[in-house]
Length: 159
Image (cartoon, rainbow, N blue to C red; front, side):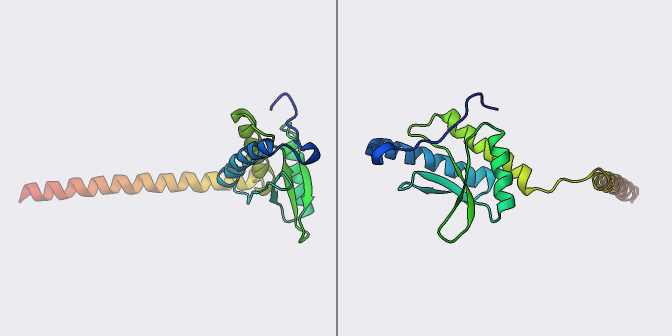
């Protein structure tokens, strides 16, 4: 976890145009990382200086908020014009590679916490048993193939 809270940048009085361009460049890098690694539909709004992704429900949004905050990244639950809840993330003009990676990693971790259902111990044991049986059968089939190939060579050599 990062030591200092990664917080929002909010331009004062509309903000300097160069700062906004640098913000947008950093935000687009974060959005690309989120789409590729966290598999969320991140969008960048340069007018509102917002980078966010939809969550679909209040429960999911709250889960993302909790998990991302635990990584010391400021996060806000937002609602778009259609009433869809989402999560907005921090970004600042000229964000460092470390800051960009940190935001992306926080969302990747959150996605795994929020989106994937944990597997209980009994189900995990069953899955491991099935995997062991598949490995056993696959090994047995491979041994039978080698035996069959050896027998074919022996028969061919006896002719």
